[in-house]
Amino acid sequence: MQILFSDTTPGSVRLIARIVDQGAALGGLDAAVVEGAQAARFKGSAGQVFEGFTHSDGTLRRIALTGAGEPGAADRGLNLEKAGAALSAKYLVSGETEMVLDLGHAGLDAADAAAVLLGLRLRGWRHDVYRTRLSADKKPSLECVHVVGAPEGTAEAWEREAALAKGVEFTRLLVTEPANLLYPATFVAACEEAFAGTGAQLTVLGEADMAALGMGALLGVGQGSERESKILAIRWNGGEPGEKPTCFIGKGVTFDTGGISLKPGPGMEDMKWDMGGAGAVAGAMLALVSRKAKANIIGVVGLVENMPDGKAQRPGDVVTTMSGQTVEVLNTDAEGRLVLCDVLHWVQEQYDPARMVDLATLTGAMIISLGHEYGGMFANDDMLAAQLDSAGKASGDKLWRMPLGSAYDKLIDSPIADIKNIGPREAGSITAAQFLQRFVKNGTPWAHLDIAGMVWASKPGHTWDKGATGYGVRLLDRFVRDVLEG
Image 1 (cartoon, rainbow, N blue to C red):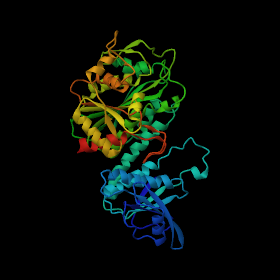
Image 2: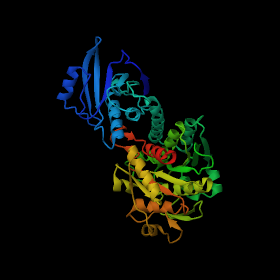
Image 3: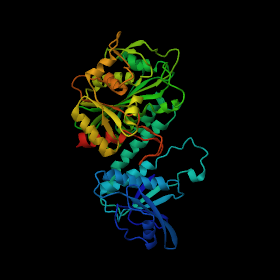
Image 4: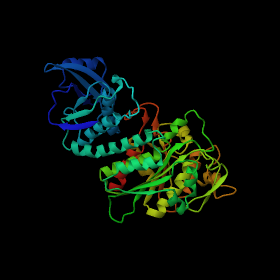
């Protein structure tokens, strides 16, 4: 969706939209529109939309009012996003190709106006490439939004938010693509194309490289697949020279059958999004690189396909990780932690990071615990946890901190190896996090985000349609803004 800033309202556009605060007077509107809004009980609550009609210059125009909620609300920014998103939701397939968004009566500052535009663009994202028989009234028609009356500085503020939107959309694309088209090599290729010419440095490890490094855990997951496993590192040096980087790490299981511990058939198609953590890291890096973030950041993703095959690892196998620790693989469907443990160790050896944050669709137990409202957060550092929690609240990618402790750690001791890859049925998300913590070197601040319930939605949200949400991109971008750029 194209967003243009104009000094005057283009006369050819029939659809005119305005932002209205809750309880605000509806000044400057045709009396019939005001009366219609009152009759429809339009109050300006966040995301509420009213449509009226008026004649102007011999043309029938559609007038859309969208609510921004209370002006002083603590979540003002998110409410303004809802206001913009509600316009996309209503008019994306309306038959209108253009909209005028008149901000002259809204009393917004530049950041507020950019929030409206961010919601409008994010809610307008669709991936219809494989839908060849959509009827005309189901196809997106809205292509351009003309913004008039924008407060001073809006164009500059929007440039930053547009980079964020680009990153979210890239993540949604990666998560949405089917596994026959998106696998480790094509994930890497998509990133190489997206980051071309940006100044980011990309490093790719193949299976021979990983074997030489001793990554037996990651390679064990992918050994049943015909697709070669990969590690992709995306480096952005936007901060002070020599300053230690912050590393974001993503689980990228491009399809997860469960391996020999085969998942049930119903719902297995959803496992194309088991690379949601890697998708979030790639999208966040694209957003940060696109807006030239003033920080040293590295995004690293471990990319594998977990398939059942004559070469696949078996329950009971013992693998040796890059760290030298041995793992008894009791369940091949607990594969994400096997991928991440080698990536975490490699990142520490290769980059000596100031801090690490990993994102992974790691456990179904997290969905049982938190549903689809929060990602689970585990951390060995209270300051890092507080910073991520704050970023989650500000961005809308909410987190809920979960516990770690020695009592849980004992549950993954193995009788024949250093560690087993699953614990008992209880506390499944916690024992998975405890597994990863064993690969974090002492003194390195680390957080593990289990986002299994957040990367895919079965119903529309305030800035996404059903499907890929792009969760995690905004969280990491906000963390960088607040903590690293300050």
